[in-house]
Image 1: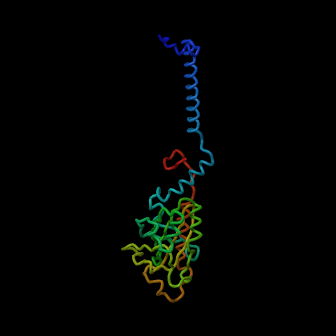
Image 2 (image 1 turned 135 degrees about the vertical axis):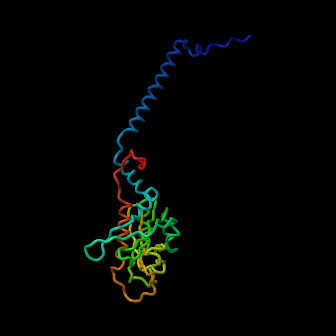
Image 3 (image 1 turned 30 degrees about the horizontal axis):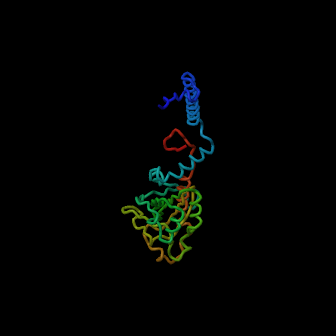
Amino acid sequence: MGRPPRNPLTVLGLTGRQWMTVALVVGCCYLVTTGIAMVGGWATFHREPTSAELQVAANNEVARRWQAWPASRIFPERVTYQPVGDHSEYASRTGIVPDSGCAQAVDEELVATLAKYGCRAVLRATYVDQLQGVVVTIGVVAFPDPWKADRAYKELPGSLGPNDGEGTARPALHAAGFPGTASAKFTDEARQARTIDRGGPYVVLTTAGQSDGRPASAIKKERPGDLFTVAPQIGHAIARSLSAKALPDCEDPEWQC
């Protein structure tokens, strides 16, 4: 006959009371460890963010503005500019383009550069100067980060004045005219100048022409050098607004601290 099974507690040389003590000690260790972890988690959650974390939050907030801000905030109804002299005038928005595709917003010569650096969207709107003689289409090109925006900025064609090209501002941002407004006749053929600016992860392109829609190639005489001075000023104002870092508010759900 085989031997009856031995008590495992006896095998380990421990009595029932000793095992109970061991179990209590182990349980207490788990409780202490859990408590320490919970206190550490609470402290981490409630501590003030570091300067580095605030900087990351500010950068992320800027990079999300093309999605988070309403179009009317990106493109204000009126933008101040200064023509020749010290007085200020207002450029008025005539419309906002609903499409935000990268390839659809620019001439085909520029599509590869935008794609190369990860273009996320091109937001466009059109303005007219105070006298409604000049039309400017603004394009905000959103990139993943400032580094890629800067690389794209350096590869894209630079600014071009009305007397610098060969009858056209191409390659450039596509013109966007809006029926029933002073910009109605503004088409790609009427583009006479272009500019480029950058702020943070955004490159801001402009293309400008005259509100009568005359083709750039049909204008033979030299035009005033300040004819389209409104264009770079609007572009710069929008680039500055989009890229200006705000003080993070980690309690606001708009921020990700």
